[in-house]
Length: 175
Image (cartoon, rainbow, N blue to C red; front, side, top):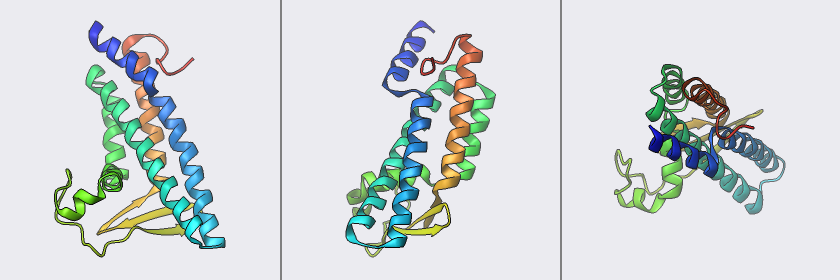
């Protein structure tokens, strides 16, 4: 267990659950701001910002999930497993959207890691804004960023509680 604890501590130094939970919140707010900017004045610059802020939200969410999955692998905590399952139910395509945005060239070629069929060459990333909800649409899939954010926050809270419960000390990413 000492090696695993050392690995978890090192992972926390690189960005633990609360670090990435906070990052997803900052990015969610930036996505909403960018979406509202596009609604006010759709220009190449505002649209470009919406795209990159969404990408960074997805990247932060993926990092949060990696940390939480590492915590689960070490603890086997049932509540954390339930939170991870609830995340997958709430945002089943979150990891896929991040993977697409990172490796779009491979998906168009039909060689993407999570490939479930060639991505249509005419596919575009579309944004739907409904008040404070931003919904991504891409090639037969949809992702609501507000639901994704809420589920990510629940996973982070469960990971922090699992760390506390199993190691009887403050989570490595909390004061």
